[in-house]
Length: 452
Image (cartoon, rainbow, N blue to C red):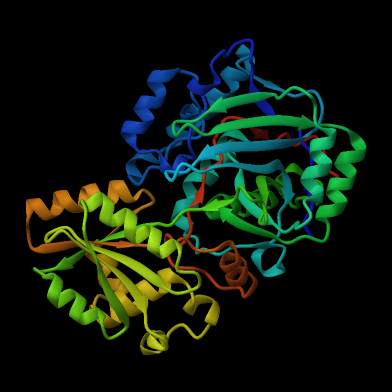
């Protein structure tokens, strides 16, 4: 099923770039303008000059924007800032990181080229909906530069860890790069070029399906680039670089694979007191107040209780206006009140669907359309950041009541089930952490080499 191929990656030249921390960047779609300026101040060779930050202003999407990136890429190649590896490789990619709880993890994966397949073929499986307007920016950038600057993050199943054990036994002794990102996560890259290990790795992936974890729009862009090249060339051969895209692959059984929850700050229209709010929720939930501490301790306590809840559907609820915190445990059968539009059990079991369909729509009367049109929901992976903003908005007052809904993470098994059924999850259902950083390795799309 899955086709993979080694490639000659383009990387920063260690003789020209001494501090790699100054030039790597987060994925383009999480970089706002202040972050972009901060990255540029670190080093003029930072990746944001190539993998341009997302722009929502149509006036910014000029040909000059993309041609400037192309010229910069070519200039850095000529200067020797970026160099290409001599041999095709699969790149082992390890990430060491710490969660706010203090627990440390090591996530293992690999960066390789993956053969493109339409979603209908069942080889590459999405769990999110993509929007063409988002992909057009990336398509113009990749077409102009003829390079893929950041990998798509995907999952595969390998309970015994055969693939990574094989690659680790054949990797070069010294890493190509090791760098800390802005969150203190350490990213390390090794090359594997031994022919036997590469061939066996390709064989092991041949019966695999791949599940996109992060980078749905980047994958759709790769499909669109292939279509673009078919129009220009008349055809794209199965061994053409345009029939592949760069992916970071991680085993879904890997102990270091972490999905963080994305908490919701909801602005309820009008003034809503705790008594009224909890009264509406008791139809579907057992409501238990958590007390006896500062707001930070209350939130920590409710998150700990949720983590211990097993398979029960639970939410935390914090009302900053009255400084009160609650644990919400869904009553048996409650979801039946709000599932007419979602017949799939795979979707009905998702906490994000329970919150959207049962809590917000059915019990609080806030439809998905209204939440979108009036920007009633703000999303936060960091509960402290969400709490801080909720308190500030409550103090400021206004015609809306901010309340914070604390979430449990979506499980990897749920991602797989939804993708296997050909369904898509609601917006902001998953947050795989840490992100794969941009700038460790680049896939330049040379039309001449054939991948086999």
